[in-house]
Amino acid sequence: MRGFRRATGAAVVLTFALIVLGAVVRSAGAGLACPDWPRCYGLWLPTPAGLAAIGDVGYSFAQVMLEWFHRLLAGVIVGPLVAVLCVWAIRLRREAPALAPLMAVALVLVLAQAGLGGFTVLARNLPWTVTLHLTVALVFLTVLILVFLVSRRPDWSVGHGDDAAPDRPARGPRLAAGGALAVALATLASGAMVAKSGASFACPGWPLCDGAGLADLGDPLVRLNLGHRVGALATALAIAWLYLVGRARRTEAPRFHRDIAAAAALVLAEVALGAAAALLGAPMWVAIAHQAAGVLVFAALAVTFGRPLATRPRPAHG
Image (cartoon, rainbow, N blue to C red; front, side, top):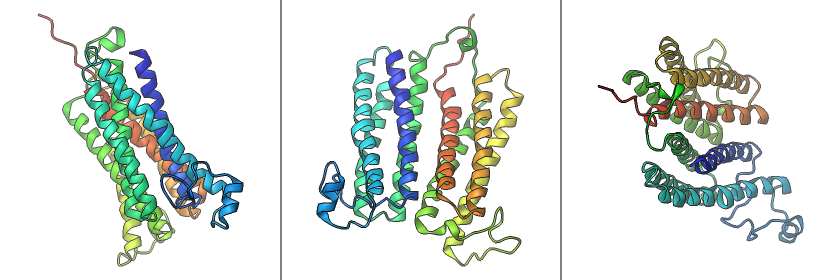
């Protein structure tokens, strides 16, 4: 089981890297550097000589390789790893019955994600296809995180020491964590829509759209930008409330408190990066760091929400 858990942890890290690499590809303007799929200009391995033989493709070799490596990581590393984990989970079904259904969902999602990736390229990176592609990737990441958490306690039993504590927050905070996770998902998805639709520069000021003036809500790009900011504010407020609840109940639910404290620290960094992106004109490094921090906030919320699901309370003794 330890080997399965480590492999699942690697899948979580690689999926995070894949999502961030997607942000790098988008920020570098390389989303269509490979205009066909699954090959790139008809090549399985683009080389300078191979691209030169095609003629001017309109992209630098570095841009082409960024997009190609993104596909390589998804199709040659993450996809097969998920398939192996799915088979592994089936073999562990007696020891850990919850893992196989979760990995089956992960496998379906990774196959859907592969199809969406191809469709996104062939549809010329339409904003809604890019948004859907990111949304499925985040749901896939959530399932992998839940698998990782469950694999720590495969029999759903109570361990020793700190593990022996019930460590389950009240129903209200657990549901609120799930709600915050859903809002964070919508916020990240809207961020992709903002970036691909050109709405990143619709609101040059921060936190208001245009300094002290009122935003022009007749402009759909302004509405899209402001909607993303409202989602970010709602996520931050939900995390702040959960942090206060977790702090008040840190004795009975210490892990919940630690998980939401990590999310609170990350959301502060995310807000600062969002402000920098607006005020500095969204330079490439800030845009990439902004999405990376957003995905980390999302992952921290997924852990906060998922850990109680993967932890059975201490059984009563009579």
